Length: 269
Image (tube, rainbow, N blue to C red):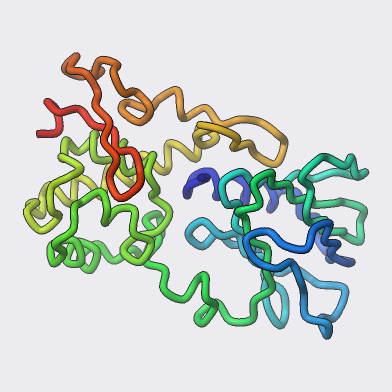
């Protein structure tokens, strides 16, 4: 599933494709549903003047007066921008712009979401989300306190969107390795110094992944159809049975809360 860096890249691509003064003329649905029903309010007023694109966690929001459009890429979703529609199998949504562009959402597995929303504070997808790790106003003290007061393992907490958003499995594994923290230890047993190092690792890895175009493990691609390159820099994720780049110990994998955790048993004691 695309994580924060991949969704941020798509959001930045779409921002670049948004022409000044352009408006959404209409939206066409080629399927009845993705993860949820594809529909818009009957009283929506066209055209829609988009005043801001925003990423919140793993969601892309297109804000306009009176509401917003929410997109989640699910497992295999992608957006592309075309001047002339070149239909592809698994296309589900077409956003038509007055100046001639088409934004087309494609999703083979249909786990994505495309919905209309009114209030981000009460929206069912957004209301309970935790803080953004790359936000300049990120409350480090509050975040560390939430970790220190938990009985859960540190990796499970990193992947909990109510605690911190967008980290996901790939970047949780990578950040824990860089901070030399065992992914299975309880968060409350870690020192404040260790937790601060972990937070720093999370932020640095996410920022680097964005610069590298994200990680393409299976199907992720940006709006231009290009794959990411950060997977070439993964130090533990997806490297089960290979030697650790630091100590040459064999990287191990274990299923943790339904997700594969990769770690070095020597570096991350």
